[in-house]
Length: 168
Image (cartoon, rainbow, N blue to C red):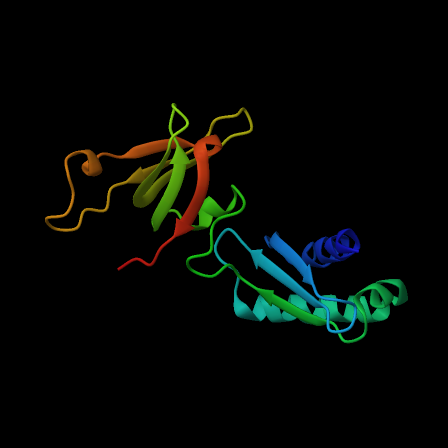
């Protein structure tokens, strides 16, 4: 069922330029089922776009008897953008966060998990396997050691988790 819903979602968002699916969750039993979509664009999705997509998808589900039978008539549809503090799930999401603070958990050459924090300065998303980001240090007065003042370049393959943070 989730695959049929995913197919319908992709069909609907294709009508909206630049919108892509970050995550889809289907929860609950047929009675009171919840369908949660997280959508984004390279510049950040607006709430009015989420509302239009929600209405369009709701209409599509209700007009398709097979899909409605699977979701149940009492389904709840929630369409939103990724919130601040939500981990990045797709490589493409880094584009939107260029210039913003990012907390990254990664594995070094020895396989040890480490954490880096900095301003996302550069993103390379080439198909030839050259996929990396560069973080510039954010130095708070009197808190950074010499090592923390250096930029960090990480291959996306090294990254375990990336979380955008508020720019204070």
